[in-house]
Amino acid sequence: MNLIPITSPSFIRQELLLSMPDWQLIFGNSNPLVLEIGCGVGDFVTEMATVHRDRNFIAIDYYNKGCLKTCKRIDKAGLENVRVVRDEAYSFMQSCIQPQSIQGIIINCPDPWPKKRHRKRRLVNEVFVKFLGGFMLPGADFYFATDFQDYGEDVANMMPVIACFENCLTPDLYRHQLPEYPLSKYMRKFMAEGKLIYFVQYRKKRCRRNIYD
View 1: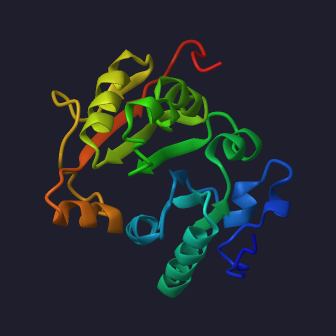
View 2 (view 1 turned 30 degrees about the horizontal axis):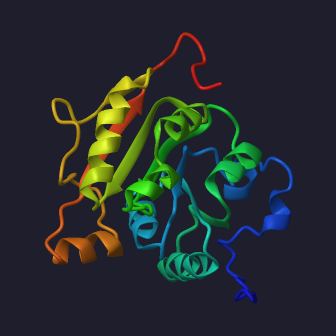
């Protein structure tokens, strides 16, 4: 398959990620790192990075077309605090992110795999969240959003059993609106169809031992 080349200065090519990147050198500062897993067409990360210029955003997506569109949005907005990577989440984090170095992780509208026989393929589950926790700093936020009711409720009911995470939406397990949280293209599309968005937000607490190994 021929991929459209991405020449944007915001895009980090795979060959530059063969060893653990120095993100402070890449961004030119030591601002906190925020990771968006599955950036889609980049509208969400562009808005977040515009509002939070004191943070550095790493946007990853498996699809080349999405990375290309994300880079175009970032470049048009003149943002210097976003870098885009085409990769799969597990392999990227294992090879490119230091343990306890991320200030926030965002996952918006991942594939819900709606058929029951396929639900084991869902990205966000207890194993994956524990895996992510090992890369998060104490006080780091974890955001999850989906338009799929079953997925939203499953994640919301799963999160309280994971040690070292505290619910930021107490007493609710999820909400259908988050103030000041941008709505992506896909969220707006789903809402226009009359669907509700399920937002889950947790924060990593300081742990006495590493539960993520």
